[in-house]
Amino acid sequence: MSNQRLERLAATDPLTGAGNRRHFLEHIGAEIARAKRTGALLSLLSLDLDHFKDINDSRGHSVGDEVLRAFVRKCLEAIRPYDSVARVGGEEFMVLLPGATLDAACAVAKRLRSTIEGTALDVDAQPSVRVTISVGVSELGRDGDTLDGLLNVADQRLYRAKHEGRNRVIAA
Figure 1 (cartoon, rainbow, N blue to C red):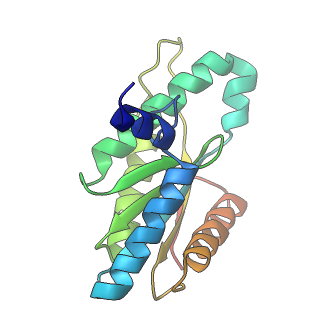
Figure 2 (cartoon, rainbow, N blue to C red):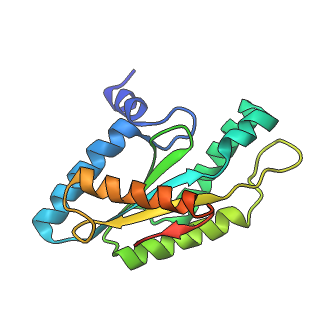
């Protein structure tokens, strides 16, 4: 097996094809260093599929797996080619948006939230599966200037979105 293939496997979530947590943390660390060096903008989305456990419990884990794969496909369609999506937990994802202000990141998050809510995800199961997402948004500098700071603010806002009823974006 080639080194390049091994590196890709080590950086990728095997179920969804999105980046994995370890790779994401390395990538965001490098992006933060670059942003600090050049003055570039950088924003982050912390996303969670609402009531995902209910899908696994009522429809089975194979349907849940299909939902996660379809969700990542929808994310990739909604973001720019140089943005990145990572699966950082069971149904928890992060989207890194280099060059994006908080307002621009919020617009991406709202578009993604609306797309996910309005789409029956393409899975083999019948009836089709509908999900919603909650999103927390943070911007480097405005919401912290370290990896931990940026992640913590995005996560706090995600939890607030869930606490306030889910299917929403919180950016402040």
